[in-house]
Image 1 (cartoon, one colour):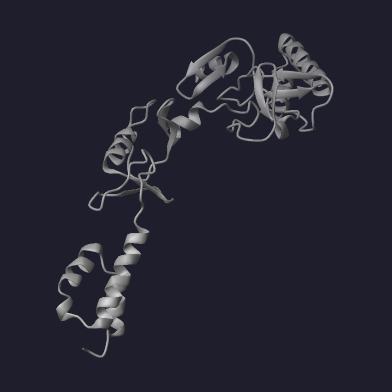
Image 2 (image 1 turned 45 degrees about the vertical axis):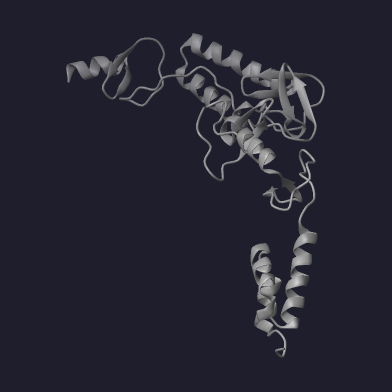
Length: 250
């Protein structure tokens, strides 16, 4: 007999496949006792590591049955269950119909349908104030709209909302700001009716700074002053009638 298996041979036998182990054992006459022992130990370890049943249908694996590993856990499937699982895998987004590519995130289930990340994000309910998806944490419903709890603050003064609340085009407004904004809108209406375009424009900018969308006060493209009433349209923009008359005589 030889002097035993070398370190290189031991590593080889320890990592040998089932077929390699069986082929080597058939030719035992060419092996040392040490080599045979290592191969037998490797064969026993391979047998012990082989799962007994399919994790899905519980069918017992035969000695020659192919075994398929599913996912990163200890889930082993027979050929029939593996093929069934593969058939259930989604191939395209149920919403936009685009094919899934390797590495794409897939959301949903076979019962509810599968979607790509973009379509899933689009269907999630959004906070009325910040526009972001409502995920986890407390949610409030006001005026038919949903809000993150941290987003329940006045869109004008940014303070936490207490007491009376109004739902405006730009979000929630506290009672004090509602009265202030309404007073500014009424004042702007008076300025427009009186022909004070510059005063109305200044007030309009103040309201815009609060996130509101007040009526626009046009600015003459020629003299750069705000104006009301009739206007002349030019390639450079609208101009007031006074500038229109002046341009016409030049």
